Length: 160
Image (cartoon, rainbow, N blue to C red; front, side, top):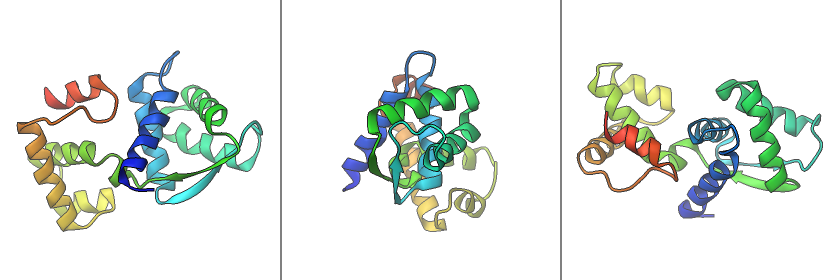
C-alpha cells in the first residue's frame, strides 16, 4: 500500500472513531498513538473477542493516549468496522507528516528544545527533522489544506 493508501486508512479510522461522545481531536490522538506504537507493521483486529490479547493490546495503547472511557468506545468502533482483518498501520511520521511538521516548527521556534532533541523525540533523523521544520514554516505561511479530515485542528494550527 502506498502513501496515499496509508493516509486514507488513517483518515477512515479517525472518522469512524469520532462522533457520539468522542471528539475528532481525541480520535486523532488515539489513532496517532496506534501509529506511534504499531507503525510499520500489520496488526490483527479482532471482531468480537473483547477479552483477547489483541483487543487488550489495542485498548491499552489507546487508553494510554486518551483515557479508559474513550478508549473503550474507540476500540469497539474499530473492532466493529475492521474486525477479523489484518491492517497495515503506517508510521506516525508518514501518516501525520504535516501535523508533526507544524509541531516541530512551533516547538523549535519557541526554544522548546534543540533540533537534535526534537529528532530524538519523534524518532527521526536530524536532517528529516530539519526538513519537517521547513515544511512547517511553509505551511504556517501558506497553508495548503486541512490536515486530515478535521477542520477544527487545521484552524487551531493555522491561527496560533
